[in-house]
Structure formats: C-alpha cells, structure tokens
Length: 119
Image 1 (spheres, rainbow, N blue to C red):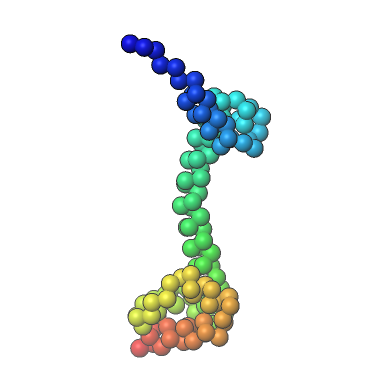
Image 2: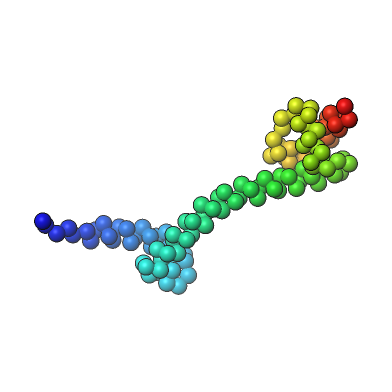
C-alpha cells in the first residue's frame, strides 16, 4: 500500500486549533499540544455557560419582579400564584420589563392577581 502524506491536513488542523487559541496567555496560545487542551476546556466552558446564562437572566427577571411586587405590598410567589389563578399568561421576561419601564401597568397586573387571590 502506498504511504499517506498528510502534511497539508495536519497543518490545517493545527492552524485551526492555534487560531482558536489566539489571545491565550503564554504557551496556551503558541504551543499546539497545550493549546489543544486549552481550546477543549474553553469550548466546554463556553457550552456550559451558554446554558448558565439563561438561568442567571431568569433569576434577574424574578428579582426585578419581586422588588416591584413588594412595592405593591405583595410577594413574588403570591403574585405568580394569583396570576395563575386569574388565567393571566404573562411570562417573567415581560413582567420584569413591565416592572422597570411601566410601573403603572405592573400595578394593574398586581391588582388583578390580588383580586383572584381574594376570591
């Protein structure tokens, strides 16, 4: 069998890894063997943190809703429960945006939740 010369493919592979490691400190950005480990770890962290970012954003929304709800003499959990009983389907992102940009509208939503809890 003829031998396989894969110099071009190997060079492309190394170049790809070193390009991904651009900006890394010391040998992690220059040496192939160390750069591969660094890039693999970076990719793993990037994947995990894309998921984590969604959790953190949701917790920020909940904190904002809770703060605005407490200004209207209600807690977050009672507000969400009241909206559920009133069949109001507003997601947390919209509620948080409303709490920041439209406090009067948010107060109306809170009053709807209060009436459904009282009934």
